[in-house]
Length: 71
Image (cartoon, rainbow, N blue to C red; front, side):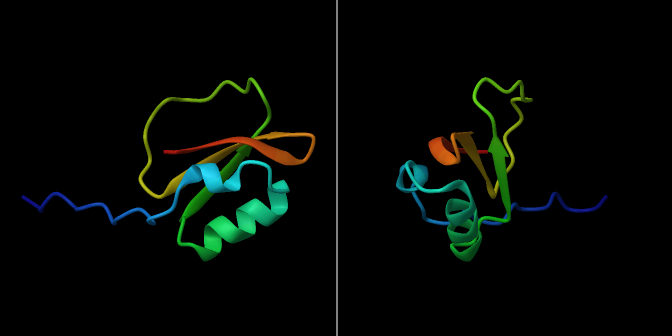
């Protein structure tokens, strides 16, 4: 049987640092800091609740990050 893969570590980065930034700037910065996946969502978007290591989610309102969270 193949070994169970170990997920890579997430960047040591606080999602709160992205709140208030322009969405495109926040995405660029997040990728520079090592996030493998960045997802921008409109307020109230319906999303699945699975946790994905290395993903950073942004709720974008009027072109700015209103909320950010891991997974």
